[in-house]
Length: 302
Image 1 (cartoon, rainbow, N blue to C red):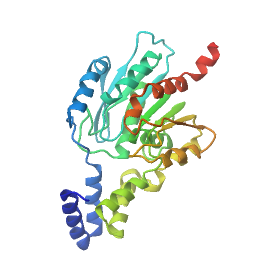
Image 2 (image 1 turned 60 degrees about the vertical axis):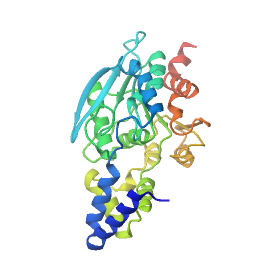
Image 3 (image 1 turned 90 degrees about the vertical axis):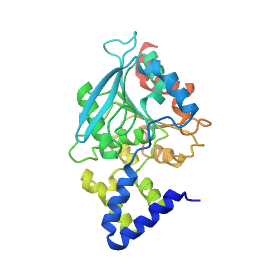
Image 4 (image 1 turned 90 degrees about the horizontal axis):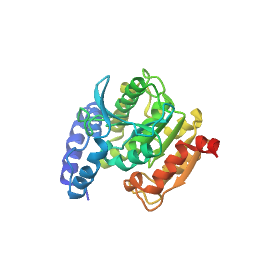
């Protein structure tokens, strides 16, 4: 059953749509991009942030500017990091923050990687109260320019889709940034399903839905259909590891299967039992990512 707030929003959008579907579509897009509150919602989240604090404190904070705002990056270099250490860009999902990737940060640094994390706009220590895929791609571009590129990009959920879209150059005035390897964990394979799902929740009329989706083209210079991460992987052919749980209730496992069908450059690994959120902290998942990041080096050493 829909909440009272959803019912009110539906009624308001229907009223605006009766006068101007375009205005209703723009309003729906604004609602779509508002990010969740940053304060922990319960004792479990407070405990997780407290446990992550010593790990996050080890990262050097770096403020990165992009067209539209600024984001907080953190640079982690371990005691064993050599000059030729793999540089990894690690990004979180919608409604999360770098702190919740503390176990992954520790695991990658312990494995010998240099790690850079980003808090998306409207998340964690970054500015703003909204987030779009366009802003995420611009934030990735800012990190790429500041740190001089990355050997591997690792992203969870929305973060994984953003990395793939950045590789595809889907924002017309931002160059494509393709790491040598990609790791996408619990990530959506295309953005259309999010817009369709949001439209169904708000019961948007066909004309309002069309206007809602059309905002993307005005922002990015590309149609919503172009934000298709699976098709981008098929074209770019970058070695990619997809990690997903078949019990993921937030991003269907069908997205992982769609990625796997993109081509022989994509390896699919099921991490069943970890759902959508616990998957990024699971030791077997971190081991799998480390093995993928350092695969060639370990083979050469053997």
